[in-house]
Length: 133
Image 1 (cartoon, one colour):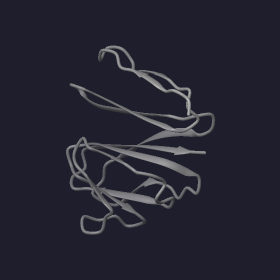
Image 2 (cartoon, helix red, strand yellow):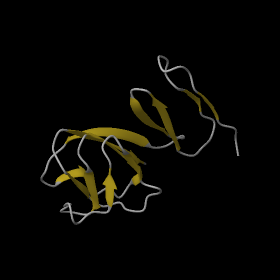
Image 3 (tube, helix red, strand yellow):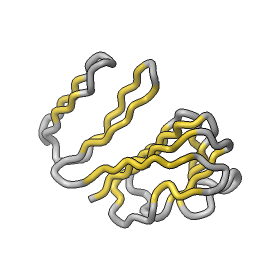
Image 4 (tube, one colour):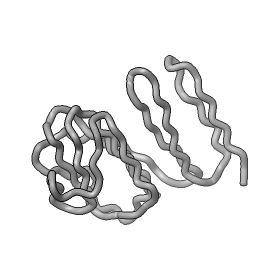
């Protein structure tokens, strides 16, 4: 296995990553203004970030994706985000509950289908990062 070096700088400077590994790498850096998340990959793969407006009706957070390799959802709202692996998320039918300003990271590619969400109140966004091949 090759070496991987990560350097953290003060909050006014970006996080520098020197990647020499051939596997995906997930980075997180916290500072006083909140949480920043990023995803870097090895020689293959693409990460995309989508902003989804919060809603008290179920919305699609991520489409059915056979090539999904990773998923991160950041709840940038003061409401609770109820995430469902499937259609029709509701306050009583969900897979994961994400606290305000919280984050959910799919531990592995445990599910490649549609992901829906609904908030307890609508006043913000979800930032959904998907890594695919």
